[in-house]
Amino acid sequence: MEWSSCTDEYEKLVFRMSTPRVVIDNAVCSNSTIVKFDSARKHGILLEAVQILSDLNLFIKKAYVSSDGRWFMDVFHVTDQNGNKLTDESVLKYIEQSLSSIHNGKTNHRNGLTALELKGTDRVGLLSEVFAVLAELQCDVVEAKVWTHNGRIASLIYVKDCNTGTSIEDYQKINRLEARLRYVLQGDSNVRSATTSLSDAVIHPERRLHQMMFADRDYQKNPIFKFTSETPLVTVQNWAERGYSVVNVQCKDRAKLLFDVVCNLTDMEYVVFHATINTRIDQAYLEFYIRHKDGTPISSEPERQRVIQCLQAAVERRSCEGVRLELSAEDRQGLLAEVMRTFRENGLNVTRADITTTGDLAANAFYVTDAIGYTADQKIIESVRQKIGLTNLKVKELPFLSHEKADREDQSVGVGGAVLLSLGSLVRRNLYNLGLIKSCS
Image (cartoon, rainbow, N blue to C red; front, side, top):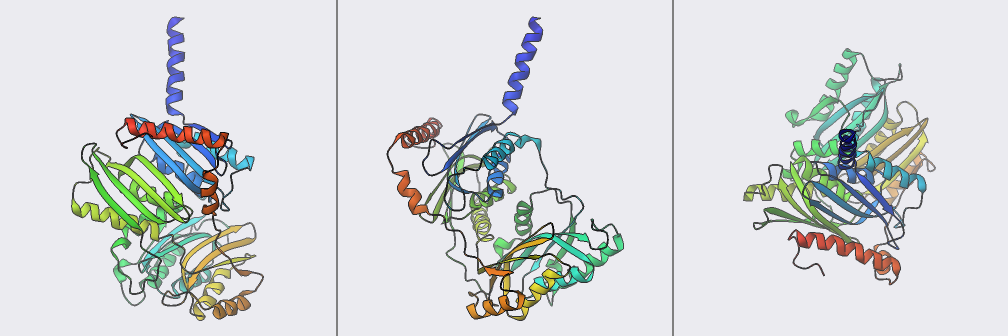
């Protein structure tokens, strides 16, 4: 009887240690929803948590990450795209359930679809040629993500056979498809850098795009034209006394910023032990205390420079260059090929694309510039809209998160502010005990 009791208690302990604990609080802070996530520490657990929040297009205003022994403690202050607290009960329940089951190892497999990976040298009109090939070979594009950076392009395209409505099973057709796309990607040069392959599609698509760009070493490329906003400021220093490398990133704030940085640190085989994230106005300040998986800090100047370059690239890949155009229309075979051809014929270059299909409706977003990277002429944009359909293709302003309002509300006095201060003090005290800050006041 006593042995059975001990066994039950041990099983309860194992369950508690292996099951993440999630608390979502809308009462503590006046201007954001607080998501607290505690879990046994393992490599990649922070990325999985941030990924769940990022997939909902939430803004992470602040975050505190701290590991104590083998336990991981995260606190996220999140808002929707308009800077408001989360009030939709279905969204709150989804966050809680997803974070609580984070150890279950869910995949992103698209049943009934064939996943294609493409990467190579970017050029004006390239996507027009890619989608024309897919239309000609009777492939219906269901979903796609396209990124460009430093003159390189990476894309994940999910297609189905137009004739069967399912994944492509004909190996001759697959070989023909890969060969045609590879030929298009090669263009007139860089033959060896163009690759086309089938993907098992089990990795998160945006993480896979980061991996493809990283493998292509886009962080080392120097494009002929570069009209991006200011380069992210990244510094890396070693804290010898504690055996950490301290990484600081300062850049313009945007959605999914934390995901992009943590994703690249994780795939570069670094472990984040502690982190603080703050935003003010439109700027984000991220600080990470990292080590290699074997517990050692960054050990050489070339490695330090590589981390700086890779994190700058990680931030820039998703930077919104150009005018955002949103296409909403009834899906049909060849729709994307026609839209992309219209862009090309009017000298528009697509720097990023998010393509989705829900039922019979296509909902696509494109970021376009002129042929050399400048902001596209408004008259050309209107001409393109006229050809595609004014009601179908619209210019969409990016959602603006009111940081100034949020910062003012942070200074408000009241019970909520007092509790928030108490929560922040607890986190700071933990960092102080670990020797990561000089004062817990």
